[in-house]
Length: 148
Image (cartoon, rainbow, N blue to C red; front, side):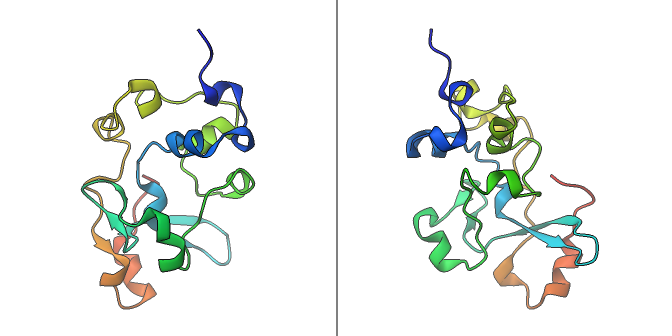
């Protein structure tokens, strides 16, 4: 049996379908993060992007997200290594670092729900959407103790 694509290809070698399949659907990328300007430390919040669909744990307008959300970060093979806030569980990060996917990853389990069942997604964690907040200080009320 052939090895799965994520074990044989670098991120740059993946085609679009493989790249998209690598996303586990955790939704962590869609949470607002705050950066301490002095230390560079990243603080996670439970505030989701305005396009984030909590029930599906997905972007409600994925194809147009960058046109509609100015600070939406599109992951690419080039920027994955430098994005410090990518979660330890992120498949893009794992593959980039030469590590294997977790058992709950949909490519391993064969089921999209496995990421939620494993408690690794942000499903049920969102306390606000960015359009609900009037200014940056309000994000502080939604700061998490640790990265999700």
